[in-house]
Length: 229
Image (cartoon, rainbow, N blue to C red; front, side, top):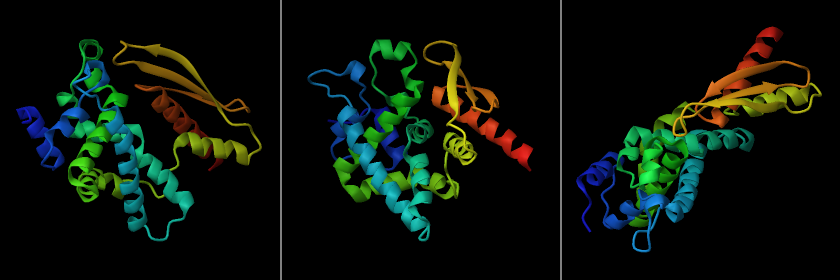
């Protein structure tokens, strides 16, 4: 099999020459267009998630030889979560080469965060199966290196930090309520409210429910910390 021009260009962007092109084709094939002769990328996604995790764990240990597990774990989570994978996928133009069914294309599948994140993990697995762990490590580090260097010293997400703030003061964990959802199905905007048992709360909007929750928690934390300065 020979890769199409767009897939050859994509392989160039990720920095790997495929000896078995079928692996890359499978990695960019969504379940919405799969068949008995055209396997989708779900199994590769499963493998790629584990390969990415091992590469990130090694990289974090090497980057900070003294960090305790309590600091390494949130950094790791920040680097391997679906949003990070989707960001890398966008930088590489992965959405442009995805093979999607008509319904998925019509609903904006090329821009969906979960779909992009899954496909990026599948691409990592394709590189691993084609060239081995060293090849996969090279690709991951090439495209995650800036994120590894920039990951915060304490990368706890805002929701975790807010929960710990509340628990330290004898409060129950904060609650998150979806207040609304606007926009088309392929590009929704979620409105979420976070509220503490003591009554303080904040509202935020974002393109995913998770991101809206994080934004609301971050805003509330900032207000609480400013009040306590």
